[in-house]
Length: 339
Image 1 (tube, one colour):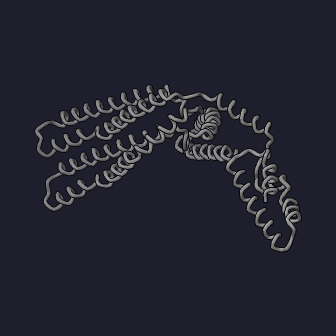
Image 2: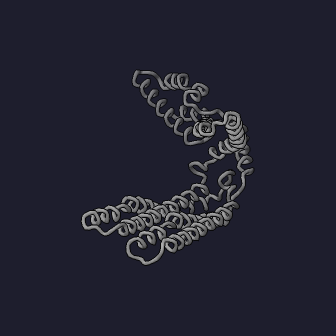
Image 3: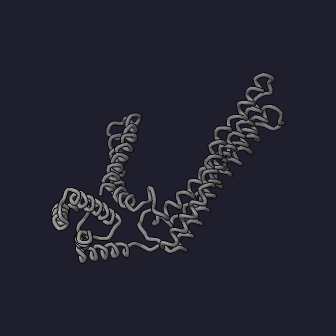
């Protein structure tokens, strides 16, 4: 068998020592040994058995075709390795400090957006409560109730919009992370993966709590409706229950936003899911198409509407336009995956 082992080593000497190739070599060694022992049992001499085994398994070109292994000479392998290194060196290197700054900014932005959404959802609460209270027991005029309620509503919405603008401006500096490919230090990437794994319990808790709050948010309203239906009590208890429902839903949505944006930040840094290298390559093509597609769609819509005057009908093109663009994006995504 020593002769066969030496021959096998020479067969694989020009192939890259990848796990795939090493497994193929081990499988071939087992087959050659089984064939050798089988020939000896049939009464063949050792030299004769070795010759048959080598002639049967010794064609390396046929083997690499069957195993699907690319054949490389040493020079080819070195050249390919240098090309890969050169391609990697062209990518932007993201330092650990830059990545930490992005993660911190994303966390702050998530809190701001979650707070803004909560304010928007809860902004009509005071208006509803004051109107209901004024009709039931509060001695104030309609103008005071509506004026105070609208003032608070607009103030809360204004604060929410301010939070959205601040968050958007802060995250503009990091937009390149979602669009451009980059490299990370292996040690930092490993540390981020561990941090993400440790934060999975928090993510699961937030999503679970948010879903439970959404389901339970209607309970106060249902209970109040049942009680007031039997004993009376006016609309005020119902409106108060609606206010509680809106506050609970606002809290649930805030949990979804903070959990989702934190998970997205890790996906961006680790270049996963829709932020993978392949998806980013496809996204560049999508952006180029969108830059032409949507202005053309707007022009077509305006020309069609002005020439026909059928504004009540021409809007129907937008659902179809969106569907077609989504179909184009999916085709591009499939083409990038195959590439």
